[in-house]
Image (cartoon, rainbow, N blue to C red; front, side, top):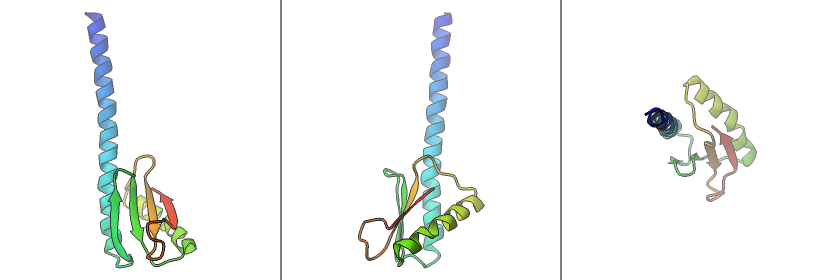
Length: 110
């Protein structure tokens, strides 16, 4: 009987950990869509913001050089902190321009 309870406790712990991961993952995706809404509302993007849950990224397009695009990273990070928005490990914002095609000219960790 003790063995069965130990296995049950282990199973509960594993389920709690997977739910925690799922909650963090779901929250990251929700936050990504919120960030897109916020950035789309500025009128500064050259294309609508996009979210890739599969690639853990938010993709924006701005009419900027790579150097100018990299300067956006601290501003984005501050916006996230001010709005208490957290992302799971590996989430990034990829900044493209109308001239770069699908290539990112800057990548900001979220």
